[in-house]
Length: 122
Image (cartoon, rainbow, N blue to C red; front, side, top):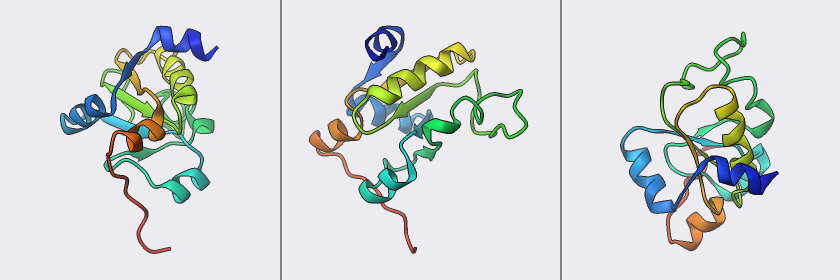
C-alpha cells in the first residue's frame, strides 16, 4: 500500500519542504503526540495526528479545521515517510489537489542537517 501511495503523490526532499513552507504551504505533522514530544517537530508545522486525517481536513465534517483547504497545497510528514505517503493519498482521495509528503520523514530531515523545534513549557 505504501509503494502504491508513493506512486500517487509527490515526494519532496527536506530542502524542497523548506522552500514550500517558506512560500506558505501548509505543513502537517501526522505523527503521534508521543513522537512529536520525544523528537520535536519541523518549525511551522501544524499537528494533526494520522488518526484524525480523515476528519479534520474534510470540509463537510463538523470538526473541520480551517487551516485545511482542499484548494491549497499541503505537505505531510511522519517519522520515515510511509505513513505520510498513505496520508497524502487519503487527502488526494478527499479532493485535495496539491498534496505531497516529505520523503524519508523526520529521519531524512535530521540526516540532512535540518533542525527541529520542541514544545515550550510543559
